[in-house]
Length: 260
Ligand SMILES: [Zn+2]
Image (spheres, protein in one colour):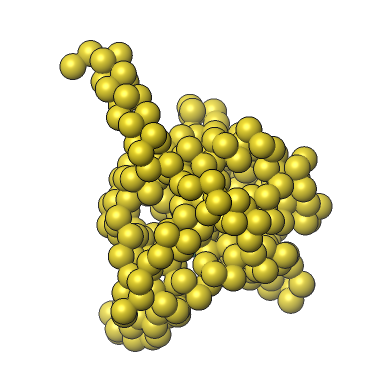
């Protein structure tokens, strides 16, 4: 089918969804009021976020685990936070998955690693969320529900997991999301490597950092953790890690510090 016809069909379908299933105004206002980093958006951006969130809810399937019922309130709160990073990038960045599993609380998972000598070590991992390439994402409602308060210290589990989804858009979780061209990728890799190394040195020195020390695990975790702070505590991130802030502002095509 010609591209233009496909685009028209998609546009018509979106219009139908928005007519029938737009997030109700009252629930939308309540969602914004609970999340200070969304309340700060310009009115036009709030409208665009509501449009994207409504389409997101139409396309994704939420399921509650361990007896949890995912209410409209919960689904809208997750959708709005998930769509904030793609406000300028569009929802297609999230086309690779459909299911989102909401757990009542953090999840304990048994992990195995094999060391260089072939010995298998088992350990427990506590997860507040998990993003998987092509598979369902997982979020702990306990953590999502605290997003309003935890934004003060730069923490946001939904943005963290959806930053991983964006990172995996080119098939690899390496802290490098799909970028325009080779020059952009070179710039990204060089900046990320510098910022990541500097951050790891701070953590090793026991410094008190805005970003969770977990960001020192790997460059892809640095990207996800810095993305959280970029959207929910932008002034702090810009002050503490200006090069990281500038890199993310270029990628997300947003300047949250200007609205904070
Ligand atoms: Zn992560």
